Image (cartoon, rainbow, N blue to C red; front, top):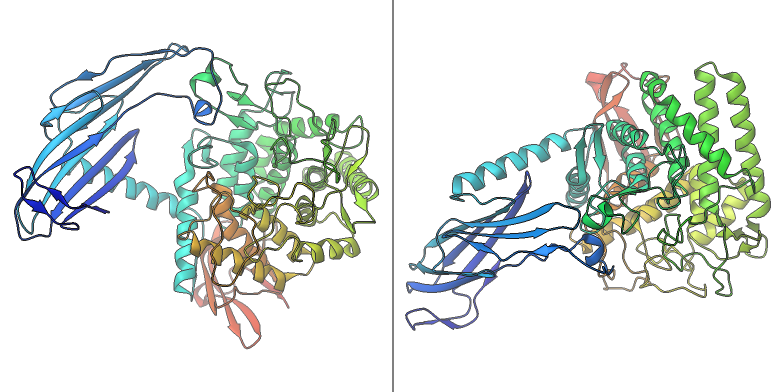
Length: 630
């Protein structure tokens, strides 16, 4: 929504400020941008005004936009100008022609290769509309019917996506707005691939399939929509590595980190066409497969996936053969130096600021490996593989013991961030340790020490949990990974806190996260700054964060599940609720169409005094066992 500054009309009349309202509505549907520009005249005079649209296309690769330089580029052609359209073209070095055609609903009064001028007469108290389309080819007549048809199909497509899985409705109107926006963002970022739905990581920088992001987003939504996890697992299995390549950091059995389709990736100027430099993605993939099986009891799908799961397990065991821990060190200089979720160049360091030499063993990765082996043991036993089950149980317990022995720092009362290539611990307090609580690795006494520190002012800003304690040498609340707040990280730590009995603390985390979302127009960004919350002040945005981001949107649902203490046992067909809590200010919350096996139920949580009770809707009572522990 825009308006005019004081200007003169084409005829020389003065148009006061605020007389003309300009509304721009844009949508993308099937590889086309549709725009409707409405000019409304609220003055008492008929005004003839000049409307100028400036346009350009440099066809830069996404990695160029992010700062990469290239020795040479392809050929940019002169624009082809027609009466109502302009065609811009670039022939890439990869042999592909990239086209951008801009079409107008009426012929501009003047049209160049970068600008279209329209002289529009808007009578008093009336409106005029221009339509613009951008796609790979020009169209004869962008108009109202084409715009409305595209808008209707886009809305229908979004509604269809949002109907997948259970829905959540509470007694809080603003809280519902947040939940609806989060659900819409997950749907917006989910692309239907041949293997099923896949949540692309984020817009604009990561609008593609990432392994880690896809797995964590699927874990966040698993209790509500297990179909998303099934799609993620199927895609990652299809793209599992089968060969060793230093350039792409691939090894047989390893799960993909990211895939790109741009010109630089196609030319292998960078390794990210299909890149495997994520040390945590493979154990997380196994963990998701096991969690999906527990949520759904879908052994038929797991049986089809089993060769891929076993290959991932074999890679995980091989990667830990040398040191007992799953380690990473990039195989080529073009790859990522740090390969955990905090993949900035300076996100792994010693307490004195030294950058450790590799190979590196990250603490949270060992937790994911523990969870993967433990889940594999349970699945193998269900498949009758008792020897495999015993082997993986032993590996899980060995990993637990090794983490407790090598990562725990008595002087910190906390787990070290990592071990360097010499086995020296990086004695830095980070949120990574909270991921150990998420998988249930620490013994209760140590978990309590970690929880107390995560909830202290060193980590908890009032809006969420910082990635790094505020006394660390590299702490910077404005950095990408060294003191900022990532909603998905806060949510994972929140699940870990709930696992060890800190459910009231999770309610406070949920409240801070919700209040952050309110300040960000109901849409949680990829990350925001880790400044301490001050009365009357809003959280500080990180300028180039993705918005929306799938695992930020999904954090709302992960924290909600932790508050409710809800688990669904797909093997037994049961819903289990343990010490449920509701978010602050919410008195009732209903989950509609929650699937348990081949049945769907409505489940309500209601505040009664200082307790929260859970019950199934009358029409469903008795169909699914509900077990509530207080």
